[in-house]
Length: 183
Image (cartoon, rainbow, N blue to C red):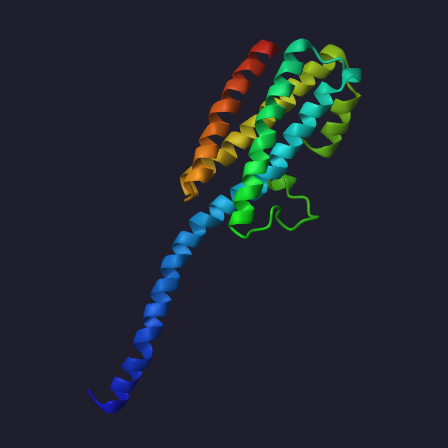
């Protein structure tokens, strides 16, 4: 081996090591990215569920007792989950929201469009109950899709544990809501 080849090898060896290390981190980073994306998207998703619950809990809406009970249950479950995901993102040094100020609801399965939210707020009594239950079923199904995705692609145990909790809790609520609709 000549001096030039040896010099080239000496210079390239550390670069190859750095490149391999970065590639390894990149693979892990993709998993962490899935965990971060899940939390950043699930926070506004949960916030809309809480907003839907608050609408149902408004006494002027005249929601039935079953809907009122479900709304209180959803709010009680999702408020602490939002706090948990916010703390996770802070611990990871990540922003709480994706591109704050931008509407990412179209990227999130199950989000209720603004027009549908406005229509829901105008309904009362049994009409409200039926529309709310249908909206919340779709919303929960979207959350379950997001949770299944992070279980498949994520890396953080706390995140996948939360995702499983979301799947279990919201699947049970969907069954209850479908029963109330007679489905």
